[in-house]
Amino acid sequence: MSCTKPKVLKIGTWEEPQPYWTELEKIADVVVCESATRAEFIQDLKTKYSDITSIVRTYYSFDSTGRFDAELAACLPPTLRSISQNTAGYDQIDVQPLTDRGIQVSNITTPVEAPTALTAVYLTLAAMRNFQHGHDLLVQGKWCTARCAGVPLGSDPEGKVVGIIGMGSIGRATRDRLQPFGFEKFVYYNRTQLSPELEKGCEYVSFDKLVATADVILLCMPLNANTYHLIDSEVLANMKKGVIIVNIARGAVIDEVAITKALEAGHVGAFGSDVFEHEPQLTPGLIEMPNVVSLPHMGSYSCTGSH
Image 1: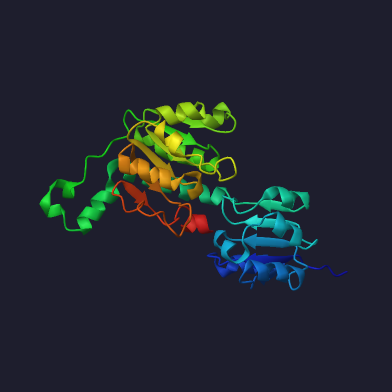
Image 2 (image 1 turned 135 degrees about the vertical axis):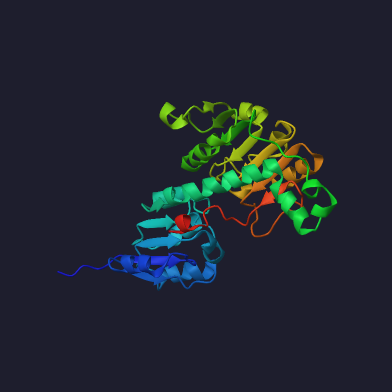
């Protein structure tokens, strides 16, 4: 009795070595998506991809397919059963219209937790101690003109309150890696309070209290309709003067125009970010400031995170 293999549509450029795909090909037919635009993708779903059972996609495949929204959900073939996103964030996918079609959506969390959390640690310490500014002055040949090339004194963890917005697996992994550095206290805001076992001594507080009391604020929440521009000019104004903000979530959880102004005014002391609202395009004036530590979305870009 013959059995037809599932057909998996592979969308985007993947870092994973071929042996992983070879293993998958033992149980499924893997088809590489050749659609270059959203319009072409929608048409191909009606023709050469009309019998696919699963889709696996990368973050950067957005350029060729656009958002997986209600419009695209209506065009997916009736054979489709699952869509797998190869990142922790699934903000490019509207889950509800897919759920209504009986299509399961999955994402990746565990492999990217440690690499992303370590990125948060780097950004936090670099922002507090002005390490990127010091590096830039060093490259400019300023070391011979002043002590430490003239970089301003940095701040230390002792006596500082860390506030984490979003205590999912990545938020908790970040907390675990920051705790040994000597911060005075950790507070967090989440949709719901965690169990004591997951809190590990962190204090659950309201969003407003976290914003008003934390010296270092880490953004670890998903991007959705409720968190888009959550950190806007009003929220920034309610933060402590000199606050350190670190974003490892998605760029659009922050109003980047507002934080640029807050940095220029000196109200925000420093900003560390791995993600940007319109990446790879950048908000004018933001990353050029000496108190900004920036990375080109490298949070999970490691051997562990990629495999």
